[in-house]
Length: 434
Ligand SMILES: Cc1ncc(COP(=O)(O)O)c(C=O)c1O
Image 1: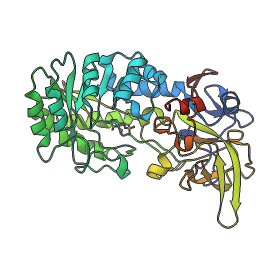
Image 2: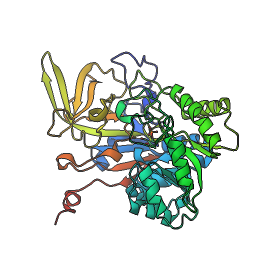
Image 3: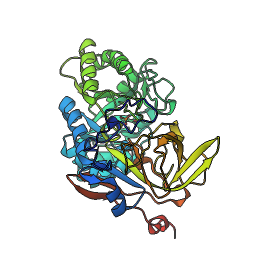
Image 4: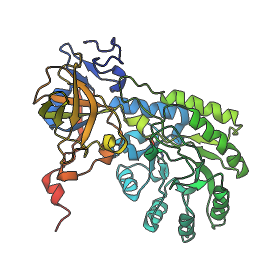
């Protein structure tokens, strides 16, 4: 097995760092990338490109880590990546599942996940979404607004469905403003400091037949330090006591490393910090603590494999490397200016001496996948290129912009690859139109 870890990850020409790759990833004797026991070049040959490749063992390991700390109070945030196979996998490993729309609910139900293990979010749930959730008997519904409380008044029988309240703690987590959700100026939840959260509790408890016993907060996404989570727990503790709430979900939001130079805390260390802070804040032991990670479960498990179609060198300016996907399979660089690495799976140990910008095939200058990437000097048209850490908010945010068809998703493990979502076809694109 060729070595690719004994490099200074911050050196600009360094090969891709191991911590950005799925756990089973390694270079074979020839320096070719292998994931789940299969060469990525063989996967591209069989399934075509672009291609989302997930290491199934990595997905399972992350779910197990979350469950080891919080049991079924660890919910997988399906918005990060949802297919029926993923929903089943998270459930098999002991997680509950969080959905935020009727569509996500139906996919998770279609996967065979028992309704009582589903938690329903949403800042604008429709009457039919609420009715369906209650009809199928989801485990928990997170109440988000005063208008939703009025909609809940028309529900006759809540059955076994329990309610939690979404609280906005008033925290500005250190992350991109579009994925910051805990601050006062937010479309989500009830403000703690204004007293809205207390008033909402009273209003919800005035509805006949409801069991409101939980609080939920989510302060943002891609958060790499624990200070904001600690602050959240400190702020919520008196609220839990005041209203005798017995379940508290601190949300998702744990970040991951995207670049060689970045590092991120593990799920276990996050769990430890949460437990410590709950104890410091004197939250009683009989309050069940939960988390709702999405990105930290799936991001590093997945990579995207593209084929390079054109290389345009503009002397003194830059080199554009165009691949056969783009902002339709990874909108994060456009939405949040997110950084990514890129490398060639045919030689992952080679120094990446050539500065490049990796762009997609969309009819748009902003269609950038890697703004400041590096590839080996001998990169050429026809090569495969891999962007790691694309397992979260890639496939789930994928679009058909420019009528580009969405790539397939495969899970690999033990030398076997299986399709969990096939490639879209032109027939799929035309299906909605008479
Ligand atoms: C309510 C809620 N829970 C969990 C998550 C998952 O966040 P992450 O993928 O950052 O863990 C989100 C993401 O926006 C969310 O809004």
